[in-house]
Image 1 (cartoon, rainbow, N blue to C red):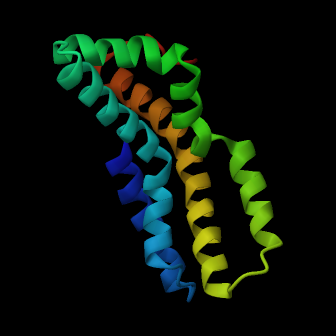
Image 2 (image 1 turned 90 degrees about the horizontal axis):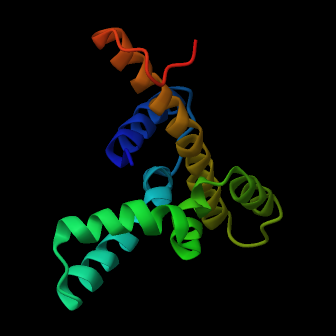
Length: 147
């Protein structure tokens, strides 16, 4: 989860648009960069409260369980943290905004928020692969780098 990186990249991508005379709504632009990761933060916070404070688990065991078991095997966790990372959901939602009958300002907020969610989705795997390539160049390691 690289939420600060997504946020900074989205802010940086917004500058050229502003220079071209396109002024996306700042709050919608920022929320779009953060929204895909919010469910995972909420699941983590809820899991910490439940497992550590209510059941009395050690935090290392609780986080190990959450991110080794629930993250990969629990359908609720999987669906929750992937819904705004799904290109299908994002494209369908963007299509839905084309048929919006409400106010134009609300339409713009939804449109830019969803557009930035798409950018967030597109950047996530690209950033991971770029980090692996940089790591391999700096260390000389080749594990995990496609040739």
